[in-house]
Image (cartoon, rainbow, N blue to C red; front, side, top):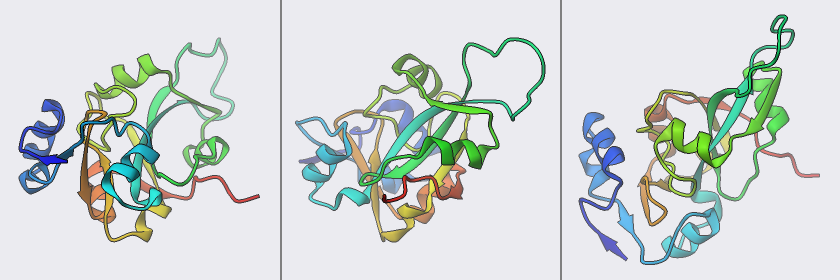
Length: 178
């Protein structure tokens, strides 16, 4: 493992500077093997899977009964921050947004919205501003780890700070145990 000031994606490093988080940039860690999945990241870091913060993009289509006419081809992007041990319940996301429909965004939409590839999407510092939901499960830890803009880099942060910097609304959107 290496720790360098240039380990984060340049756009994310700039976002950290803009937010006055240069100390976070100094704590970005890079790994020779990819950390694009929560399991890969947790294994590389040596932390619990639930300490990984996944940044997932969904597409949401307006409120129920959103008016006449054909449905738009693409929905509005929404970022969901979820702990690495849990799965997002799309129906709960739809309810939290008051949307008519919510789906997972495809790789093209993720890159267009965030400026990052799947597996490296950080919780903030995106190309465009989106609505952000953060699952309360992230608050169960003192520190969580999130992608720093590449599939090989991560950074640690207190979950309350991460939620605040992402401009997220705290919600309960993880799948319930059966």
